Image 1 (tube, rainbow, N blue to C red):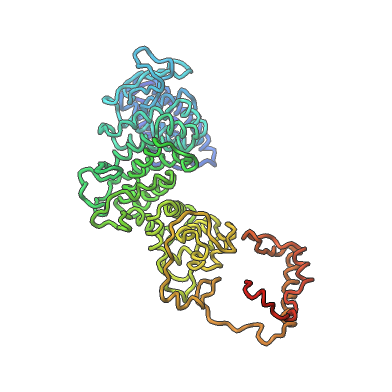
Image 2: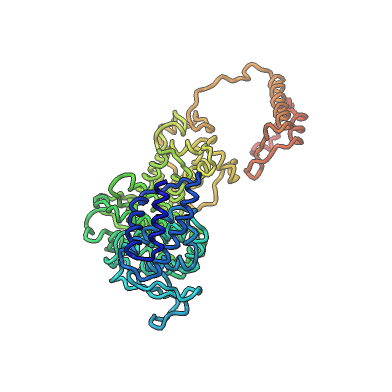
Length: 600
């Protein structure tokens, strides 16, 4: 009840229109509510407070459209930030006028085509950043606005509070999202993002510029396309990421930390908390605007831009934060984005020269590929939400191995080394091969298909080699889907290196059960001592049981077609089997014709 009286009193103070009284009332409200993020919506008191909050929101906006002292501007915007946390109290802020006011204080409002005489012409023109001490009157419902003051005089606390408020509105309300897109806020933000090398901007402003960009690109497909194409988002954000990480370019598509060019990647100091925060926001935005890249062809200019970005992402992959959990999150965003790059551009992962301490394979630097492999195995060991956590890295490794011979050979040496353990089934053990074979029978179809595809590519899509390392039972799902159950090879183009066999494998090869992929002790023959008639009777019993189960739809019997794919056994097929004994009597031997001795 005290809260209700306080809010009513604050509204009354605001209604006086006096800045000093309003400032004191808002500062009191802000202190009390600063850490309030949950709102009880069940009792009558909340409904009364909701009305008062909406009134307060309208009054604060009316104040923001006046000339205010800097301290009063900040207090008003802090109140807006707090009020916009409650999605049921957004009504005062869901108008073009209100959003324009907040955008002006955030320094991201864009001039309409009807620009004031003192402004420079040009489509997409962006006003100066800021929001301190300027008249905030809007000229018309068409959206013509006055310019904000320049960045040199900007109160960055005011800018940050306005950005936070806009982010809250976009997060909670679709109307707010439409208004933000209509007002072209992405152009205003993009203009400030170009100033990534300017040290004048504080971390908080930089961060919420990026957070707002992320929300716009995540929630609005049109804004996503606008940033990617019209505003050249790949180049813009790539430069921002490069500046955030403090990179230099000692060679073509080779990155290093500025001032630490001679330090091996594994010995670089951790990135700061602020660098990691900004970098992860940039990575998330880039993921949004490159989401469909792999589904379309890119020209040479675009490919060059993606290779440049790929080189920066390689540096991200080789960098770490102050703390394992933060590093894992940073690498996760990096891997997700790498998966969006056009496949031919992934060759940048292999471009750096081999340095002291680097992992070399076939004369190529495999540091990045090895890091991806270790990252993938950690996700595999975690076992939690494999579809979300494992598949991005596993897909990336699969496609890299498919198009880069050196990558495939390196990964095969790590995942499928020459087979020595033939006593245990492929899914038994703690090697990476064992772990991957285990998830080939995972309940999630996407997970098991992805694991099988990775191993199949490492086997150069050779059915016999795939079965050798996984067992026919584990491999059957992928082989059936591709029509390869009869054996053979898929259409992939691979070099013709031979599959080396260890002495242990050669000795045990004849005793390996191809279904399980391991040596199996000899089992007693269940038909030993049975006559041919008894065998035939048992076989017919089995066929009849299949027939009954099939007719009652308990099972769907399948058979292997001539195309190597499984097809249903129809009741007619079963009927034919029941009338055609599986083990007909041996035909009487005829004298061998000397002319047919050479026939197979």
